[in-house]
Structures are given as C-alpha cells and as structure tokens.
Image (cartoon, rainbow, N blue to C red):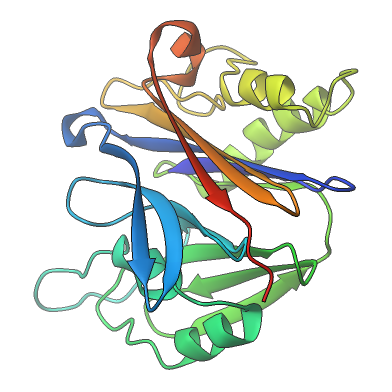
Length: 245
C-alpha cells in the first residue's frame, strides 16, 4: 500500500515513497545507518526489523510494494514478512551482485510483492514480481515513472493516482524536490483511499521517504506523519558519500 516515484535527472535523481499502512501498526522508526558485508546502507524500519525502502552507498535504491491484485495459494502456518527482503539484498555493490543474490533467495511463504531496484550507475530500473510461487523479473526504460499499490485495488490505485501524477508533470517545477513533496501530499480528486496521500478510516499514509542521488552524495529525508502535514511533523535527515565501484 504505497506510492513510489522515480525522477531521472541529468546529474541527480530523486526517489520518493509514501508508506500507506494500517494506523494501528504505527509509523515505524526513522532511517538508521546499517552495514552489510562492508557496505553501508540507510533505511527506515517498520518496528520489527523490516523496511519498505533503502539505499546504499553504491547508489542502489530498493523499494517494496505489496502486490494485492494477485491471488496467492493458501498455505499452512504464518506468512513470512516481506519486510526482510530489502535488508537481505541492500548490501549488494552492483546490479549483477544483487540479481545473483535474489535468484538464490528463499521467498517461500512470503505473500506477493513487487520489488523495484534503481541502479543509477548502470542506468537501469528493474522490477521483480513475486506471486508467492515464482519470481518474474522485468526491466524498465531509464526514465521517470511511478508505481502504486492499494489493499483495495492496485488497478484502481494506478488509474486514479496515475492520473494525478500525469497531471502534476505539467507543472513548471515538475521533478524538483518541492514538486515531489506536493505530489506525495496530494489529495487530487479528494482525500480518500486512492488519493496519493491516503486517508481511510483504518489506513493512512504514515510516512514519506525521499532519496536524492548525485555522483558524490546520497541524501535521505524522512517525514513521520501524513505528507499533507509536512510543515508541522518530524523530519530526519541522513547522508552517505556515494561510492562508485
């Protein structure tokens, strides 16, 4: 239940993600620095050690969205958390290393998800779709784009939020940080389950994470609260020096 935006620039790239979640789960923890096999990474936590977005010092960004419009087979026992996927892969130093690690990962027992990988030094965008049985990789063109998910309907989220995003791209400052924040705080069409900033009785956008990648620096800003209240909430900022392999 999220909205993910990638903006491809000439020398810098922007990623923004809303985390839409049941209010009872809470907003989670702000981003912290981690180290995996000598690679530094930054990501927020859901409070149970899992995450929905992360970036490492090699500029690799991973973002995970639930895949709600696919029916997965019934399984015995408790489902494994999808939140562990990113932390298992974010230590990778390049696309080939990450792809190899993913191919041998054990995803058995995890509900369906879509994992988006952005590899700026390779100018590649990959998406892996897990339907709880098999993993399907897809490659996207290196260009700005959006991804959407909703527990009510991924298809409806893509249709309605997609319209809001396409309309926003006509604004004079489209692609800027200020524009990204306005977009992810948007209630275009009315605040509700399919607005970019989600408002439902039991589900809301509980946080907003923003990543800015340049050849020398990686900046992460994280806001706890509904993006429409960004002016009054709690911000956390983190920095990494970008390391080219």
